[in-house]
Length: 451
Length: 146
Ligand SMILES: [Zn+2]
Image 1 (tube, chains in turn blue, purple):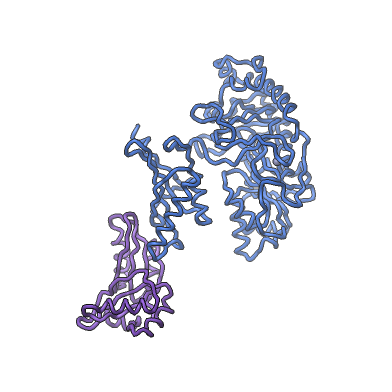
Image 2 (cartoon, chains in turn red, cyan):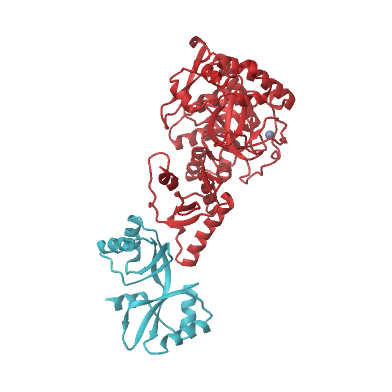
C-alpha cells in the first residue's frame, strides 16, 4: 500500500471493493430468523443424541419439539468448558466416529486440552465461513497470503489455510519459526495478505523495520488477525508499521475455530455469521441479556455443526453486540472486540471493569503499555483500586513536577476509560512480579478477606 | 560550565535509598553531594559524582532508573545576605529556578556552593556570568571535593 497513514473506520475505505463471498451474508433479517429457527431445532435434535446433552435437556425439561420460536433458545441449558473436559476426549460426539474426518483441540493452558471433531460437511462449512470473512477483508483470488499461524491442533493454521484456498488465492503455509525468515518470505514471494496473531504482526513489523524495510518495500495490503484479544491502538500501530488495513476476526475451537465472526471493510465490529451461529450477550452473573449495546459474555449456539454441536456455549469472552445496519450490506449482527474474559471481570463499586481497559488507558498515555498490577481492596465500606505501574527508563524526568504530571495523566486516562478513580503508584522497573506465560494483572484482596 | 547530575527514581519504601548507595560504593564511586525530592509515594534522588557515565552504567545494571541532567554550580558569598545577592542576579538575568540544593563542601568564610537546575543551563551560564555570578567548573568542583 502506497500510504502509511491510518485509514479511518466507520465507512468503507476509499477505493476498497466491498465484495460478498456468499449471498447468505446479506440475508434479510426475517429470512435469517426463519433459517435460524429451523437450524436450531435440528441442532437440538442432533445434540440430544449425545448422552451428556440429553441429560441436560432432560433436566431443563426441553426437547427439540419445544423450540417453536427463537425465544425458546433461552430454555436450553448452558454448556461450559468443563462439560468438554468432563467428556474428554470426544464424549460430546454427535455422529458415529467413522464420520469424523478431522480433530482439533484447544491448548491446555488452563487445564486439560479439549477436543472438537469435524465431519466432511463441517469442514466444508468452516472453510466457507473463513472464506467469507477473508473476502470481506479484501482477499481476492489473485493474492498471495502468508500464514504465520502455527499449524497443528490449534484451529488457526488449518482453518485459515483452507479458507484461503477456497477463495482461490495462493497460500504460503509458513507456520511458526523465526521472524526474519517470515519477513524474507513475505518480501520474496510478494504476499499481499498477512495472517497471524496481532502481537506477532507487530513483531514482524518491528523486525522488518530493523532490517531497514519501509512499509512500501513490502507488497502487503491487508492483514487478518485473531487468536487473542487486541486493542484499537494496536491496530493502528500494526497498520502504520506494515502499511496495511488490519482486520479482526473471532472464533474459538469449541464452537468451530476462526470464522464465527469477522470484520468487513468498515472495520467497526465483526459480523457474526448468524446463519451458522446464534450469539447471545449475557450478564455473566445473572445470565440475563445485557441492555442493547452493552458489554456482556458471549454465549454461542452452533446451528450447523454436525460432529460436535454446542448448545449455549459460555465463551467467557466479553464483548458488546451492535444490531445497527452496516454500510457494507451484511446483515449479521456486529460484535465489538473482545474486551476481556468474564473470569477476569472486576466489579468495582458496582461498575464492571476489565484489566484490558486499564491496559488501554496506559497505551493512550504512551504508545506501549508498561507492566502494571491492579490491586483491589475494601478497607472500609467502599472498594479501592490501586494500579501499580512500572516506570520505564525513558519515563524518568528529573523534575518532580513532570513526574507528578505523568502520574496525573495516567490517573485521568484510567478514569476516562473505566469511569473509576484508581490511585496510581509508580514503581521501579522490575518491581512487579513476572510469571512465565501470562502476566498476573489483578490481585483482589476482597476475595481473600471473604474466604 | 555545566555539572552533570544523576537523577534516580526511588520508590518510597524502606531500603530504597540504600540500594544505589551500595551499588556506587561497591564500584568505588564517591558521592560528592546529593539531594532527595519526594512525594509520599516516590522520590527522585539527585547525585553528583566524578565519573557520571560509569555511575550511570553500574546503577542501570542494578536495575535503577537513572537519567542525567545538567546543573550549574554557583559560589555564594558565605555571609549574611550572600544568597539574596546571588538570587537577585538570577532575577536580573530573567532566570527561573526549577530547584536548588547545596554542594556538600564549602570554603568557610569565603563561599558556599549551591547547585541550581535552570531551564537552559548553557544559556543561563553565560547570562549569570554577565551578571557577575561566580560559577564553578566541574574540574574545580571535583578538586574541592578532594
Ligand atoms: Zn459490515
